[in-house]
Image 1 (tube, rainbow over the protein chains, first blue to last red):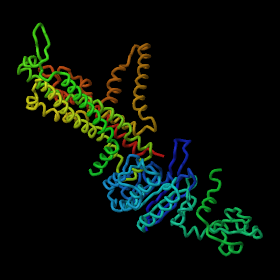
Image 2: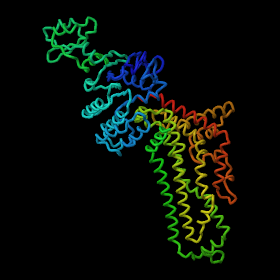
Image 3: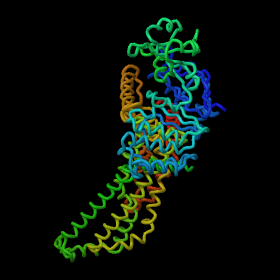
Image 4: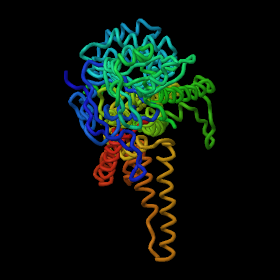
Length: 294
Length: 330
């Protein structure tokens, strides 16, 4: 499968000269086609900057290839194949639903008008309704209707559900999976609500202070990381296996082990010290990012 | 080309209020004022036109007075109306520069402020096409809408006025309608569009550049910056004048850079600025002649200042496109 995005030595600095702070610091990664990638990191870690570079919205240093295009010089061609929702509720206030559909149908060669209209019909949106009269959730529904009807090879979602209630959020990801995603498409999502998307992700990328600290498929993550509930009598034995993180729940220690780390413990060893289970992305994230804000 | 059509349509959707409704309301008010004035005149005068005024001991009635004008006088009057009626649209062209000014200032600024630029940028539309669509909207779409409304308004006002005049015994409707100048005037008005476009490019370019660049307070930057520079220049000129006896021609800068940069979107700006003799616009009867205005306006294009303005304006539009492309919207 060919790569959708290949980054080599990607850097982006804000500011000039010695005061320049790198938002993205010499990062290299590859995203293959047909994946749903969660790009996850704390605030200010550089995830939005990385996506903006890939979408040709900001200048950057290094090499970046998106669907065979250089986002700096070939953005106009690239945007025929890529779509993005950069932020919630950013549609222009004066835009009416039917005008929005007409406009996108007019300018986008890969827009499927019937699909957009079908989706809109399933919501409370009315053709004459203007964005300024909509709730935040309805704006996102309209935006999603437009974007899902575009047959783009790559869809980038940067905090697409921020500020929405749980019903809109669930519906958003459900629609995305049922009506949009297929093996020919790739989706990159950033969000803080990790627990809501972890079941739809195929790949994880953790980014911290402009560096990628973890890039793996969900299967790899499941094989590599194990959480163990350690009873107090086995505490010292468990500690000897070098957990990468531990916390206490109801008097029991919950330890996190990385089998790929130095002296990584095997599954059998871990089973001997307590009850093992697969780690959640949120817990792994918190453990990985410890000290980020310190 | 199809994309451009949709981009222009988008501008019209967003600014229908200022491009169409603002001049339409002004036009309606103008027609209403004229109609009410003439209606009042008709109601206040006796119907038979026999009101007598004593001039030098002679009793004169309206009809007498008008008949005394003779056919020559009527022809002159009809000619003046046919040539000059289009000027009644002037108030609409007074609205236009304000509409265009504020449109240009907000064109590349508002969508950055409310971040909806990210939606437009998620579609396959180049920044060049986006900016060009705004240039075309400001320089062609808005003036054409105003001109069309202006022609209709001027014609309606002329007809109302002539109808009113007929009521007092002056029947010139036929003579006016038979005058080819009456039918030519709308085409001459629309035919001035290229002159308007070429003169207005630097102002539109400057405003779009500021609109694309400013992080806030676009109006202050667009107007305040040139005025501040002018004040600074005046101060420098004062210093050099006092100590070295070398002055800077501040007035020249004020006229040829600041005024030219900010006010070129005023229709007819080229008449005073292009140093057209007032006499050249008048006809033999010393009334403003639409044909003469048309010819003299086109003649201004022979002046190099027009073309310097076009080049500078185009450069600023290119600058606006580049800023639009690379400005980080956070």
